[in-house]
Amino acid sequence: MKKLIYIEENFITPDECKIFIDYVNANKKEDKEDFFRQVVDKVTTVCKSFDDRANLDYVGVAKWPVGTFKNPHYDDSARDDIYDIFAALIYLNDDFNGGHTGFENFEIVPKTGQLCIFSNSQYKHHVTKVKDTERFVLSFWYNNDCKARLVKTSQIPSINYDGATLTFI
Image (cartoon, rainbow, N blue to C red; front, top):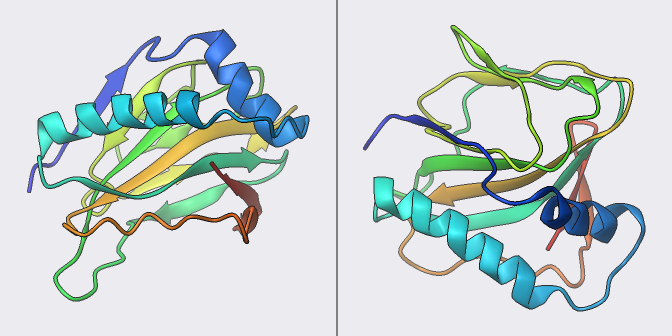
């Protein structure tokens, strides 16, 4: 399994980022499925270029309120020979302070539209405390499960995850 941290600036435009934020924040629930699928497919193509076994397990917008953070951890959902390969993040805004994605030796300062892919079960990572205004991130988790298991979440539109609200797309 490859161990990597990959960053790409301007992966999507600020206007595209705003579509995701509006979807969560302003309750604009009109049909965005085609646009969402294009972005998901674009991220998945990059992930598969690093490891063709990468299969999407989850995607959603994480809304991190002021004061939230995530302590250092490894993502590990290993079960029945299925394990995490990558996490991918697209930062949807950067008008907050803090909220950096941290690793052992450095931190990524979020920039609107920036893509970050990393080996989430191999790198300990964290999120620094969000200050001043909310942080929005389009979050993906990929594992090696060859069966499509991405859960359709029409019955569960969002969940609380350590203080952040995850809204499924």
